[in-house]
Structures are given as C-alpha cells and as structure tokens.
Amino acid sequence: MARCASFATFIACLFLTSLLLGVVVLFPVMIALFASPSSPSFAVNLFHNQTLNMTTNLTIHFDLKLKNENKAIGLHYPDQINITFSYFPNVSSLVILADYKLDSFYQGNGKTKHVRDVVEAVGFPRVLEGTDMMVFRVDLMGSFRYKKVGTKRHKVELGCLVAVDSITNNKMQRGFIRMVKPGLDSKLKRKPTPHYGGGVGRRL
Image 1 (cartoon, rainbow, N blue to C red):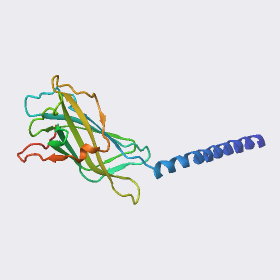
Image 2 (cartoon, helix red, strand yellow; image 1 turned 180 degrees about the vertical axis):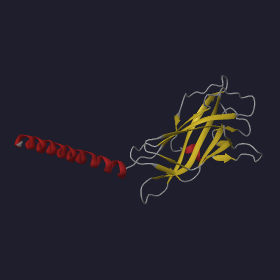
Image 3 (spheres, helix red, strand yellow; image 1 turned 30 degrees about the horizontal axis):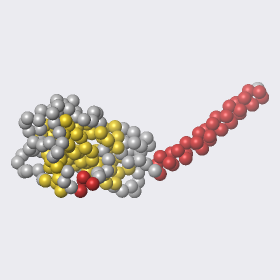
Image 4 (cartoon, one colour; image 1 turned 45 degrees about the vertical axis):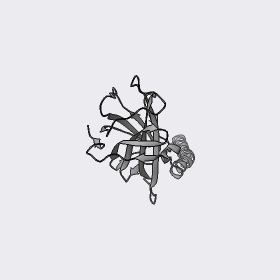
C-alpha cells in the first residue's frame, strides 16, 4: 500500500511539474503575442478569373484577401473600408475608374477573409503614355482595432499596381499582389470620377 501511495505521489508531482513548466514556457509567448500584435495584411487579385475585354467600358472583377496575422487576438474593422480603382494615363496623374465600400466586420484569430465582387468602371482605361501597358492602381483606406481593452483605431492606407499588356490583354503579374504603403505615386493629383450612375460596387 505504501508503494502505491508513493507512486501516486510521484505521478502527482510529475503532473504538477509538467504543468508548471508549461506555464513558464507559454506565459512569455502569450505576453509577446498580446503585447506586440501584428497589423493585418491585404492582397488583391485584380481581374480575378476574368478574360479582359478592352473594347467596351471595363467591368472589374477582384478578389480582396484580408488576413489577421495574429494567432491570439481578433480584429475589429469598425469603419467602412474604401477601395478605389484607378489607372495611369501618364506618369503625372491618376484617373479614378470605380469605388467600392466594404462594411465593418469582425475577424477572428488568424482568420483570412476573401471579398470577391465586381465593379463597373466609369470610362475606358488608356495605355500609359510611352508604353504598351495599361497600368492600374488599387488603393485601400480603412481602420482596424485589436480586440483588447482600451485599444485605439489604427489607420490603414495601402495600395498596389497591376499592369496589363495592351496587345494581349493579359496581366503581367499573376495571382495576388500584396498591398503596401503607397509610394510617391499616391501624391499624384487624381482626376475624379464623373457623376453619372456608375463606379459603385455591384454585389454578385
């Protein structure tokens, strides 16, 4: 009986020791995850599964990917996310083709959200002056907040460029393009979209 009691005590001590070691190892990791959370990442596949037709007003298919990079913290997107589709007629200006708005939502730990939709462009994109390419730009503006007590909104302003061969109508980059902080081209003067019933998101 004494031997059984000693064995039970040994097992209990082993369990408590393992539990303590687990806490010691995991506690700093959890602190790091909560103390230094990552910003979400955004990427877009412009003209997603689309055969381009450049002879008429352009219909833009897109797949926007939003990823919560945090395994331990959820994200709130409290405001509408605004997405603008533009193109470069030359190196000194941008022309807006369409706008799209994504309503506020919550994103769980480590989750990825895809937004696949269509917008009708206002007007017709032209070839970038001096090249045989049409160069499109996608801009995203919004905000997010970590699911933690007392956290504030963090603004997001990102963009990317997508080039299309004007002869073959094929994209020159395949798949998703990561959206990054805009460079000097974001400072270019934009020509506004004419106000006549187009350029807004159309749900599929």
